[in-house]
Image (cartoon, rainbow, N blue to C red):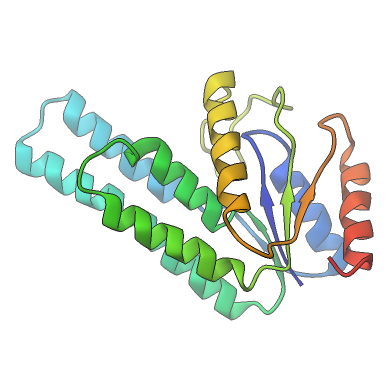
Length: 199
């Protein structure tokens, strides 16, 4: 059984993922996006501090590489675990890429690679659990100690992109959690019912 969780910032993905992992005795895979955001921070700092063109270009290439590093690490985790529940997955990687790089010239080859990767990885996923968009539950840092961007506009943009990416994948089993007000236990019950139905 392979389950991945999608949803807006602070919507309860980690909490639900750990509850699913505990109930079914399967590994929980953390989102692991911190290196991407660290590389982004370095790149932005270089530009802000007017570093040399070579330094900025190197930081840019390192940031782009961090997306592929995440993709490779996640592929290894998929190989290492027959079953798992994952906080975020390859659709989130592409969403983040599009958010930061979608308007940049000369990146279509990277976007195409990440899009193909999403479609390939989706073949091994049994269920995508999509949490609803709404006000965040909490404003503290994420489980990976990343500062959460809880702006409504950014959240809505990312949620819309994720929905579009998921819909682009044929034959993907998706469970839409119907309401943000559901407790963790109620959300877990929704997942249980879907699993009992065979996804």
